[in-house]
Each structure stands twice: as structure tokens, then as C-alpha cells.
Length: 318
Image (cartoon, rainbow, N blue to C red; front, top):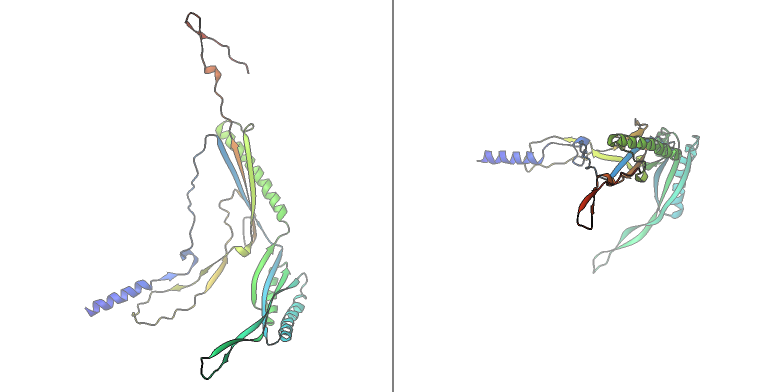
């Protein structure tokens, strides 16, 4: 009986500590879209034609933001220490041509700690007292070559600046890219309209038409996702065992917008993070209702005597 209970305990523990993986393909939040095409039934009088295009644009300017925090007992000391770190970094950074810097003041606040006030006939009292100052600034660095970021990190690390907040991407040709997307979409839309006319055996020249369009831009900064990169094995441990789980590494990766739902893509191959410009245009065509054919109508004349006679009205030449 004891052996059975021990075996049951081991099995229950194994079930609770079953094998699990942190690879992206095994994460619960990863869901892949349905692969089958599902379209709505056509309406008798309306046709909706849409074209979607995307352009992958390589940035030509970057701005990296680094955060600095300095604490000291006096305001003069905290400013002196902060200026020393910043000035030393900026002097070395400006040796590289084409790099610009900007210092953004974030906060300057006093720092408090609790001081214990001892009394003989009462409980201890804790009072907040100022013990120094905390100064925070951000260093903005603009550069054009992404490989320069490695050199910037080395320079800043010498002055105890480690916190890279984010990197922003900029492109000067976005307006030209938008025009190119709109022109390619216009050509694709005209081709699709001709295809519909050929399939239906009619023309939409006199049909009522309504059109709408829009752009959307995705920056690399907002396209990073994360997952835990680890794999824990099954262990047959006793119920009373002490388990100390290690901290799992979190992996970040760049996940661009996939191009599988677009009619055309400019620069489809992505090697590094890019600015993605998306464009969609929709055309609503309201087909003309077919008028009734008067040639199929018959007319009857009733005479004063009550006789009915068929009238042969000649066909209109309109």
C-alpha cells in the first residue's frame, strides 16, 4: 500500500512539473492565422475592389536615447558629477563626424530616508529627512550609420552610462514612397476593374463609384516581441523537495508586418529592421439597375361595345 501511495505521489509531481519549452513556437500566446481563404457572397448591385501595398524603407537617420541618473549629498555635487560624465562622453562622441548630441533635462528631486526617533516611554518614530539629491537626464544622439551605435555604447560605458532607452528610425523619402505606393495601387486597381468587367461581360463606365484610401506606418521600435528562451526537463522529485528555479532569459526579436496579404510589396526582402509603409485603397462600384424591357409588354384596347383588341405598338428606336 505504501509503495502505491509513493508511486502516486511521484506521478502527481511529474504531472505538475511536466516538460515545457520557452521557444517562440511553443509559447501559448503565439497564434497563426487561418490559412484558408474566406470571402463573403457577392451582392447583386455593389462591387468592392481593394488594393493593398507595402514598402519596406531603410532608415537614413537614427536617434538613440540614453538615460543617466546621478545621486549626491548636495546640489552642487550632483550637478558636478553629472556634468563630468556627460562632458567626457560628448567630447569623445564628437570626434566621429556626422554625429549630433542633445541633453534632455528629466528631473531634479531631493532624496529622503527614514531617521529613527527614540523615546523612553513610547514606540519608535520614523521621520523622513532629506539626505541628498537625485538628478536625471537623457542624452540624445543622432547618427546615420547603424554600426556607429556599437562605438557609442563603448564610449558611454566608460562613463557609467548603460541604459539605452530606445532607438528611433527616420527616413527622408517617406513622401516619395507614399506617392510610389499610391501610383502602383492605382495601376493595380485599374487592372482589377478591367478584369471584373471582362468576367461579368459589362462595363462600369456609367456606374456610380466611391473611393477611399489610407496610409499606416510601422516603426521598428514598436515591432519587437519577446519570449523566454529556455527548456525545463521533467524531474521525478519527492513532494517535500525544495525547488529553486533559475531566472529564465527573455529574448527580444524583430517581427515585421508579414507581406502575405498585400497585392504588391516594394523592397520585399528584409535583412534588418525597416520602416514599413502600408497603403490601401478601396473602390465601391454601384452597378446600374437594369430597366424593364418595354418590348415585352402587351397593350389591350377596350372598345365602347366592350370588345377587347390587341394593340400592336411599334418598337421604339431609342
